[in-house]
Image 1: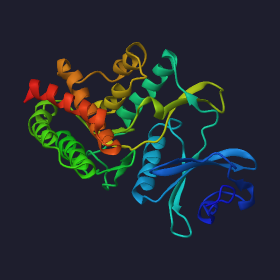
Image 2 (image 1 turned 45 degrees about the vertical axis):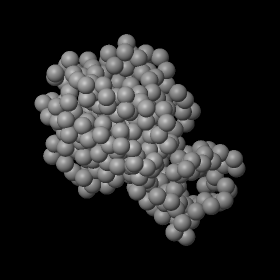
Image 3 (image 1 turned 90 degrees about the vertical axis):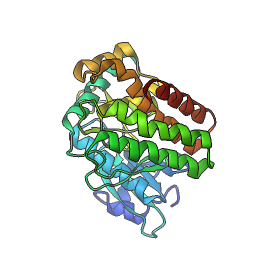
Image 4 (image 1 turned 60 degrees about the vertical axis):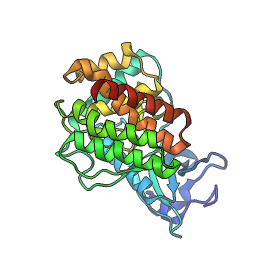
Length: 313
């Protein structure tokens, strides 16, 4: 697809005459797992476009936008269409364009985000963890399995930790130390920390670091409102969301976490809350190790596993 010509399959999914739509001449962000840009309608940026060779990546992102936007309208871009280029080369997703998107900052923004996220976690629920039809969603380029699963301990142990340990072996080769640590965490730490909590399936963004959250001006009121994007949504224990938020920072204890836990209290036992968050952060440490070749992320993951094993295995 050239920079100026939209694929016919994308054009057919948009309302109105095809001649209304153009691509920008320069803005195309290219990553290993997809290309993003925006679509102008009559010269005005109106839609976001992502296209990639991975069907699962695109289908997963479209599903995530559908679920989040239905549960909390305005919290993420509205999904418009998803499909396959007419030449069969790539899959695409179209969503509403976030005008004047910028980084979120300050306690007022953090509190607003906390309120929106608490609403998502409290009201978007399911009968099982994962997704009802098992559709994979992608955290970065990692295609995460989402088979509907009755217990959180099983879902997290098998379909997140064991899965991402296996991905590390596939990506980086066999690591005996990682195997031993991983087996202990999956077999001992996960049931010890997660079997006893009162958990229910809540919709989560799944990859909510500070770079996937921002702010825009409401088109009707002009008020600044938080938005989230690049989601890999699935149904999880709501505390899972906080693992990557802690990993990279950007959310303050006096802003986001204070307001969020006023609305969604820490689960009992509260004295194990920090260790549960560390257990959830471990998935993302291992995912980054698999995606980026081990290194610092793998060292962090092993440190987390040793600390958890020392206390709970």
